[in-house]
Length: 175
Image (cartoon, rainbow, N blue to C red; front, side, top):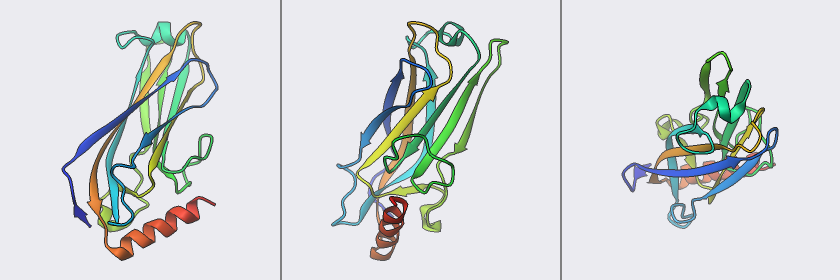
């Protein structure tokens, strides 16, 4: 595996305007992934940021009560939130807010380490899109919860064997 680029960031934002509903957006990797050159994306880190209707809004008027915001980044479109053992899962996490002033978050997978040891703790993606999904349990009337994903990644070249192994794994995960 050889790095073709330095580290760069991809970002995407999902706006949640109703509770208990999945909101999804895609991140196009077509300019970075090239099957003919065995080129893929190495995801080093994934950060999730939760904000209100405006970037400066606090959490109490946003949620109006205890809330949980879940988010996931996958390399296959499953149509809904997935379990932690799903091979398509790249990263996931949760943000907690309670009206007593408690705020917390957890990264479930950050990013996963299902890939080969040559990935150096990152996740290699050779699919042409990533899928970002978020949902909240509680949302105050006329409010929107914005969740942004920041993906630290680089473009890499893979050996024929590594590329084929990842392609087979991705195909198997699609079933």
